[in-house]
Picture 1 (cartoon, rainbow, N blue to C red):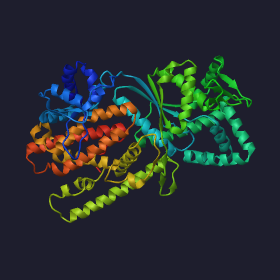
Picture 2: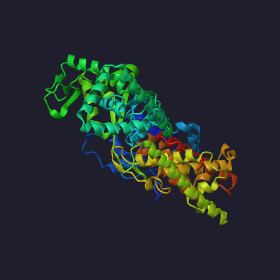
Picture 3: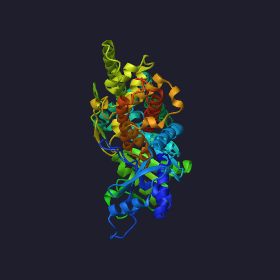
Picture 4: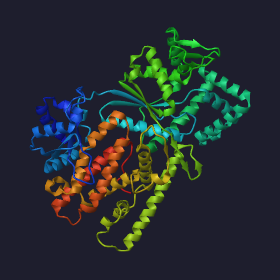
Length: 606
C-alpha cells in the first residue's frame, strides 16, 4: 500500500543499495502533512539503513543522504527527489497520486490500508482477547468501561488484520462475594424486587450485608460457610447463585448492545472451581506448593523466600483463589483454542497479578505462557452525572444520550434562527462546519435517541483513546461534548456532513473524475494524509494503542473542514464538482473505517 508507491521506491533503492526491496519497505515512510509548507510524499531515513552498522566512523548521515539521492533518478512514479535532515525525500507524480489513491480507497473499501505491504507476510494467528469482565450480581460498574472499549478496539483491529479472534468475557462469578451475597439475600432479599429490578436489588443487598458483616462476626461466618457450600456443590446454594448469574448476564447483554460490543464466549471463574483443584495438585506434584502456618498454600516465585514474590493459591479451608482459577482458565483455553496469543485487558492495578500468573504457568512447564500478554490501563477520575458520583455504566450512557440530545436541539434551534434571517446563498461556507449539519438536513431524524447515543459514545471513546492507555485521566463532560476541537462529536459531525454531500449531489458524479481538477493545496494535503493510513494502522497493531488512529482521524476531519470551505461543489463545473465529490467520498470512507476500528458507529445524519 501507500498504493504501491512505497514498493516502487523500494525497488529503485534496492538496485542502488543492493538490498532486497522487502528490507527497505519499512524504512520508507509517508511524510506527515505540514501547514507551513508543501512537503514530499515519502522519505527514507538513511539512519535506519545504517542501524546494523557498528562502524562508529561511518560518514555523516547528511552526506550519506546526499550521495544516495545523487544515484537515484526520477521516473513515471517519482517526479522529484530531494534530501532533508538525514533523509532522502520523494515526491510522487501528482496526477498519478490523485488517481491511484482515490481509486484504491474506493476499490478496497473497508480493507483500505490493511492490504499494505507493511502487513505482507504477516502470519494469521488464533488470538484470544479477554476483556470487560464485570462482577456477577453487581450492576455494570463504570470501572469496567475502559476494559470494555479497549478490549473491543484490540479485537476489532486484530480481526481487521485477518486474525481469528475469540472475544471472551470472563465474569467475576465466583468467590467470597457470593458467600456474602447468598447470606445477604437470605437476610435482606425480596423475590419481588429481584424480579422487577434484579441488579439494583442485589447491589443494595450486597452493600447492606457488607455493613452487617463488618459489625457482626456471625454474619461474616455465615457468609464464609455459604461460599464453602458453593465450593462443595450444595444444590440449594448453587440454585440461588445460578439465578443471580443468569439475571446478571441478561442485563450485561443489554448494556453491551448499547455499546456496540459482542462476545463469542461468556466464561467465568465458576467454570474453573474444579479445575483449580487440578492446578493445586500439579503445583504440589512439582514441589512448588508450600503450606503456611495459617494453613494457606503459597508458591514462592523467587525461589529464595522473597515475600514480594510469594503468591497465595489456596485458602486455609482448601477453597480456590482468583490466581488459581486464572491459571486453570489459561490452561483450558490453550486446550480449547490452541491460541497463538492471549491478551488480558484490565486496569494497571492487576499488573503484578498477571505477572505472577504467567510466571506460575511457566514454572509449571507451560512454554506457551510467553504468548500471554497483559494490556494494562489507567484510571478514569471524576466521572459524575448531574445527580452525583457515578457507580454504574448505564447512568453514564443515559447521561450521554440526554446531554447530546440537548446539544443537538440547541444547535438545531440556532439553525432555524439563521434560516429565518434569510442570509446570503453562500451561508453554508461561512457557518462553522458543526452548525451546517442540521441546516443541510431536510428530514427529521428517524431515531434521535439512537443518534444521540452513538454520537455521545463516540465522544466518550475519543476522550478515552486520545492518550496513552496506561495514563490516568480526568474526565470532563464539557470537553467530551465540544463540537469544535479534537473530539468524537467533531468526527461524527464530519462524517455526517460528508454523507450529506453525497446525498445532496447524488452519485452521478462518481463514475469517473479528472485528476487535473484536484491539484489545489487542500486536495493534495488530503491525498497525502490518506497515504499514511496504512502506517497508522501498522503502528497501532504493534503497540495496541488506539491514539495513533484517533490522531489520524482528527487531522483528516480538520483537513476535510478546510477543504469544504474552499473546494465548492455547488455551482462548480460538472468535471470539477465530480472530482471534488470523489475526494470527499474517499475521506468519508477512510473516516468510517477508522471509527469502526475504534468501536464507533458512524452516523449519517445529525
